[in-house]
Image 1: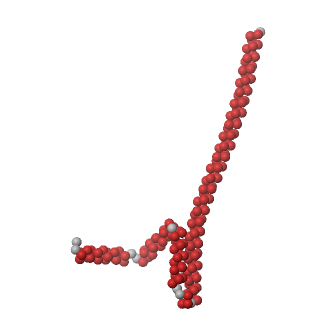
Image 2: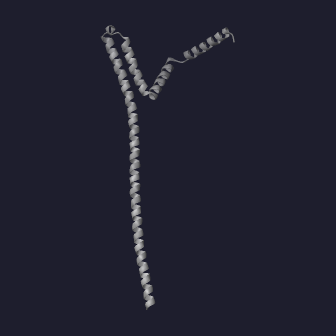
Image 3: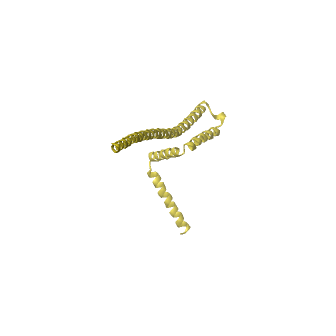
Length: 158
């Protein structure tokens, strides 16, 4: 393939890509960008917080102090507040998820502990009942054996 053919092929690919991009509406692109951002934040909450703080610091450092008027300061303060609120919310969501998982593990642990205590109580009770029954049967068998011996002795002597 010559250089000209490669160039023509590349130009054709660029035109096709531009046509695909033009075919997508602005709302489709905005929706896709929003979904991508949401997915990224869900997968990487701490990186998102750090990125928000870094972007805020970068914007703050790019704006010279003497050129910022009252309105600019107010907008920068609002942007900083928004960024911090967003970061705080993301952190709280991650923290809540961790706490929820920990609570569920505690609940499961409590349930296992309660069940094992109940099983231990039931087993102890069953063992005690079995011992009492065995003791009672042993006494009864002893009495019956004693009576049988006594009856045999009485028959043999009379």
